[in-house]
Every structure is written in structure tokens, then in C-alpha cells.
Image (cartoon, rainbow, N blue to C red; front, side):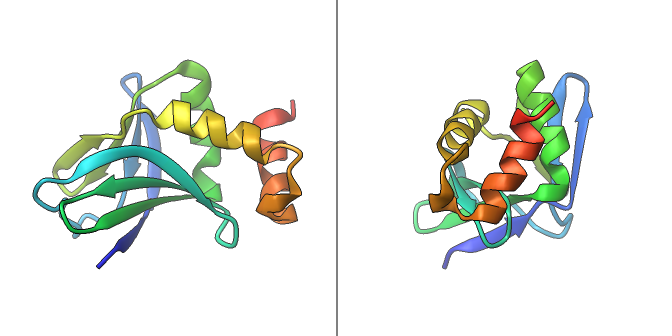
Length: 125
């Protein structure tokens, strides 16, 4: 069964962006970065996909953490997922995020609210 994990905290430290989820969560054995991202237009969230042999984990990065995403993207900092004491690098995060941002920009297919939020955060000022 697929699961959604919501980022509860984001922190830039030591040249990295740390995305932190509920400390009670445990990375499943054999989990691997899928190196692919989606968006959840309704939740205004970017979604990084992790996979195991039999399921997907969707790491949801909601709008409150987008300022940290933008700063890390601009600085080309590695993005790490931390849950409890475990850490996993989210490979190709910036490539995937950049691709999505360019596709969302001026594209109403993603929904007006998401398009506007992305424009304001990533392309204005």
C-alpha cells in the first residue's frame, strides 16, 4: 500500500536542505529514491517519490516549506530526507523540481492556485 509522508520541518544547514517528517516514521527496508517528482495541486505540494519492491512512498513538501526549497535550489544544495535517526538523499531533486516549475509556469492545467503560488514563490522578485 502506498503511503504519503508530509514534511513537517525544513531546515538549511551545513550546505544541505533537510526535509524532516514525523520522527515515528521509519524508512522501509530497501527504499530507494525514484528520482521523480509530481505535484499535488489540491494540497499545493511538491511530491518526491520513493520506492520499495512493492510500494511507493510519496514525500509531500507543502507550500510553507517552499522558501527553503527555493533557497536550496538557488544554492544547488543537496536535499536530504530525515525521519527519526535515518537520512536518505533525495537524488535529482533539483532537476525534477526545476522541470516541474518550468512546466507549471504560465500553465493553467495545474490549477490556478498552484500556478499562482509557484509564480509568486519561484519567479517573482
